[in-house]
Length: 195
Image (tube, rainbow, N blue to C red; front, side):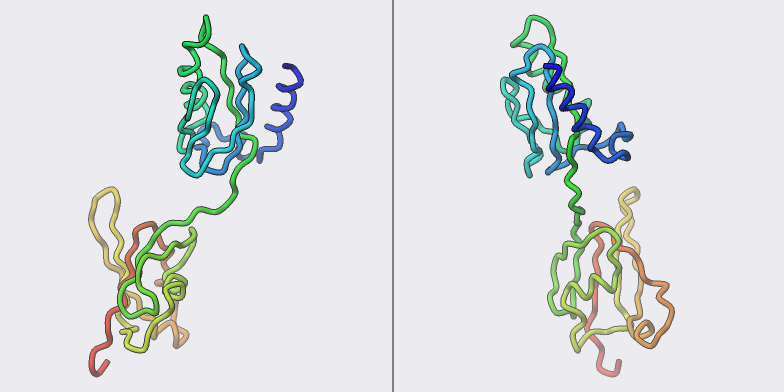
């Protein structure tokens, strides 16, 4: 038992310092957890958080871990194990490895681009980069009237930002290099006859 707890402690030290100090860390798919039940060391194990966000724990079944804190997962496992013990078991969960894959989010590009539709982008992606990911502007694109439509999640109000690609192409200021957010919609309208 002591050897296992020592191994867990050593493993926990391998977690990045920022993560170890963050009490509010939310577990995500791909993280590796160490589970310790003091009253029954046969239940001690390491568990990978599966893509559906769950881990499997003997006698407790499938437990939702992704999106929860370590404390929440500890409580859930202890609650489920309680009927198998005379007294409520002491359960400890620690994150021993973090999935460091950067998450992506969806944005939508419509209109005169090579591949309109939903595009998965990484945090920090700009409007120009998103247009490039959507196949670039086609020959019928109204490059002076590109729109970015963004809905404010707190108010539900939609804001419209206009982007002039021609000005950027001529070396103008890139004040419109807006960093995209989840759910943003980029519309590239069709060029008018004498535009």
